[in-house]
Structures are given as C-alpha cells and as structure tokens.
Length: 486
Ligand SMILES: Nc1ncnc2c1ncn2[C@@H]1O[C@H](COP(=O)(O)OP(=O)(O)OP(=O)(O)O)[C@@H](O)[C@H]1O
Ligand SMILES: [Mg+2]
Image 1 (cartoon, protein in one colour):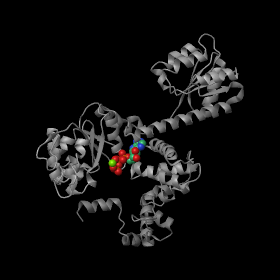
Image 2 (cartoon, rainbow, N blue to C red):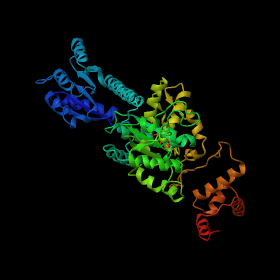
Image 3 (cartoon, rainbow, N blue to C red):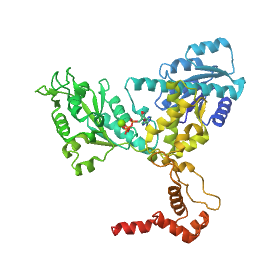
Image 4 (cartoon, rainbow, N blue to C red):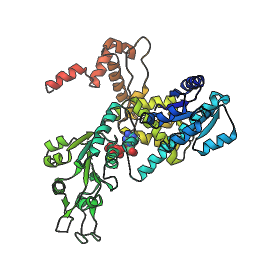
C-alpha cells in the first residue's frame, strides 16, 4: 500500500532534495512543508490522517521540530516520527526519542541511512498492525479494516456489510467456499452495537441430525437419553450478541420450522422444557448453496429463506478480485504466519509470486492461506520460492501455471492450460494426456485443423481419427447437438 511521508524543513531546498531522494528510492508519496506551524495544522486535521510517517527537522524558526513533536504526539500517537536534522547532537537526539520520535538521522549520513531508518520504521509499523490484528482476532473481535483487499468487488461488499452492521437486520452471506463469509460475519458483529456481546458460530452442516435441536435451543437435564446435564444451547449463548448460522442450507425441514418460529417470535423452546424462553440475538447466516434452487427442490423453506435473507451479501471469489488483492493477501499471510510460526520469512520471490498470482485459487482465500502456511512451515529461508509451492504446481487446476507466453510470431495467443494430474491427485494415463493435448491444441489454434496437425506432427486424417476416438467435438457442433437433444 502506498505510504505517505510528510517532510518538514524550513529550508525549501532541503525539502526538495529529501523529496527527490525518497520518491526515487522508495516510491512513496511525499508531501513537504516549510514550517512547524503548517505541519501541526496539517497533522491535526482530518486531511493529515493520510500521513503515515513524519520526517522532521528540529531547528526551525518559529515553531521548532520539538514543539511539532509535542503537539502532534497526543493527537497521532501511532504516527512514526523520524528526526532528520543537520544538528546531530546526542543530547537533542535522546530528548527527541524520549518525546516519542522513533529514530534520529543526520542529513550528512546520506540517503542510505535514511532509507534504512524508514524501512525499519515501516516494518515495525506493519508488525505492530499485524500483532494488534492477531490480538483482536484472538479476542474474537474483527473489524472491516481486517478484511484485506482493495478491489472494487471487495470494497463494495465491505461498504454494504458496514451498512448492515448499523442495524440488527438479518444478513444472509453467500459466496463460494473459502471466500471469507465467516470473516464478514465477524466484522459485521465487531462493528455493530452488539460488539460487547458474544459472537457464536454454529456450523449447521457439522452437527449430527439428532442433536441439532438441542445444540441450537438447549435441553433440560434428562430430556433425552444421554442428556445428563442441562445445556443452554447456542441461541442463549449468543443472547445480547450475534448468532452465526453457517451452512444454514444444511438444516433439515423439522429444524427449519423451529428456527423460523424462533426468528418470528424471538423465543426458543429448549428440548424438554415445555415452555418458551425469550432471546435477543442478531442472526447472520451463510451458505455456499443456491438456496433459491434448494427451495425449488423442496429442500429449503421459502418463508425461512425470506426471514434470513432480509439483507443479502455476496462475498466475491478471489478470481473476481484482481491481482492486487491476491498480492496483498500473499503479503498479509506471509507476515501473520511468520509471526505465529516464529519464522524469519520476509517475502516471496518474484517467480513464486508470479506463479501464485496466476493460480486460479478455486478454494479461494482459505486455500491461499493454507498454501502460504504449508510453504512457510516447510521453508527455512527468508523468502518463499517456487519450490516451496511445488504441490500447488502439481494440482490439476494449476494448468495456467504452465503459463508459457505464446511463442514469438504467434502473438495474441493465451496460455497453455494443461494439467498432468487428475482429480484424485494422480498422473493421468498417456491416452488421457493425448486427448488433453489435442483438445488444448485445438483451442490454442482456434480449431485450424491443418495447423494443429502440423504442430502436433501428425497427418490430418490421424488427427481426425484421434478426435473421434477421444470424442472431441468442435464447440459449434457440441452446441448444435445439445439443441437437438442428442
Ligand atoms: N479478505 C480477507 N483478508 C484476510 N483474511 C481473509 C480474508 N478473507 C478470508 N480470510 C481468511 O481466510 C480464511 C477463510 O475465511 P472464512 O472462514 O471466513 O471463509 P468462508 O467463506 O466462511 O469459508 P467456508 O466456505 O470454507 O466456510 C480465514 O482464515 C479468514 O480469516
Ligand atoms: Mg465458513
């Protein structure tokens, strides 16, 4: 993410030279100001919140650097300040550090020293950010700012979710597997007025059918065989907070009726209690099934669907979010996993990064997180490299990773997308591969049969024979056959 640095120096020439140096070596956005007063005005304003780092001269006429430091610290305690001055005396340095500056750099030490200082500060900031994020996550508190990504698709989802967080409206979160449905549910809870209450997640698909009712609504002691203790159930655990019904599409019809009643009347009936109990819970549910379809199939109650789906929220798949989001997530997981696993990993090599950004990630963010986790645990180096991701390269969907740009003279062609492994993670047979190669080549050369035959080194008639053998049909032909119902 772009860092915005403010340089404050009464000498405009010094400002300009610092700006040129910084923009050249760090590609950061730099703003300069020539007086302490202007710096205080900016940093204490709304606009000033965009500044991520302050490079501050000490000896300035009027408001001095030290005064700027004192005025800004209470308002922006988290803003790192590096003292950058021509007057390098230790006493002043120590004083500035005591007042909250993070480093002291003398102008005469040159740009490299400045770069090291800035790098260190920003690295420290990122670590601090990560640590507080992890701490909040451990305490179960998630904010929208914890949801990584800047693509229009994810920004729009965050905006909608933030709106939902302002009220108690029931939200139904949909999206493919591993896209972050639960994270969104937690962020809605974390940003709502119920954040002080509990966030209780129930995976409706993971509870044995005969226990669902008691898990959700609780039971009295002795209500059924094996009910040796009274339990309060998830609804009452979530009282005053949020109940997250994950995989809600898995609930059986009899439970759907009871859930509907609980939602309509804000009361539940614990198994064996004989009388209802009032509850105050906010419901967020999630599914990766198409519930509309399930209604049509008679598997899901329409009235319950409308109770749950008052505010629909679709979390986009990673493939619809763009390369920048993937890169941000890679960086994010490298940092967090390095911290939690105590590894010295600081990044990913460009080759591996390229491969990872090309990967289609059918399992979305969960799969990406696991990939980094696995690579990080196995690696001893500072950078994760291609070989740390060998198993990803071996996946069937990793076709794109062949990623061989079209040969010269064949400009405009895409990538070759051939996978060597089948769905069971074993090598395909030679016959299967031959069929795949022919299919791939036909697509690659837009079904120019003579060209495909020539490139594959077989005659046209052999190619036609093999196409028949592997049941390979031109897309137009397939469609026509489908229309005719053959
Ligand atoms: N935008 C994001 N930024 C950071 N981490 C994310 C993001 N989205 C998801 N994650 C992380 O990815 C993992 C999977 O997310 P989550 O469990 O919320 O997905 P899900 O859609 O509920 O998955 P499933 O369909 O498997 O239930 C979690 O560890 C989550 O913290
Ligand atoms: Mg989930």
